Length: 151
Image 1 (tube, rainbow, N blue to C red):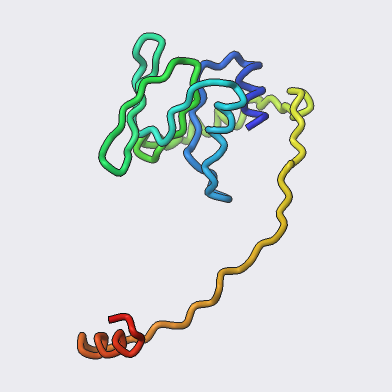
Image 2: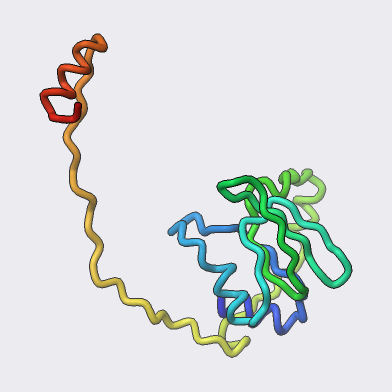
């Protein structure tokens, strides 16, 4: 988040769109942390976006249906899967992309300290569960549930 915020400032970005969560830890923090570091408004879990003058309309799914919010720009948005249908790269575009230069920027170049302030104290495996039992009939199932005190 620190790196993204520093890049946004350097590039004078007005909109940052991120996925809603990371695939490695599923924590859902990058968008919110980036918005906080920049002191920008945020729209999370966006399934639809629309520009309206200097504001961004964000539609997102909630338990009761859809929620629509408007946020001022610049802003950070985290995207739900429904926000976009991915485009697939054509072979000519893949070849063009291979020839493009990618600017390598180190955190120090942006004045960002990326040392972790988080210390993992302990990781426990979940308790093992007993294997289930297959039953042939509903009567057998009810009998097993009664034996276990579940019914």
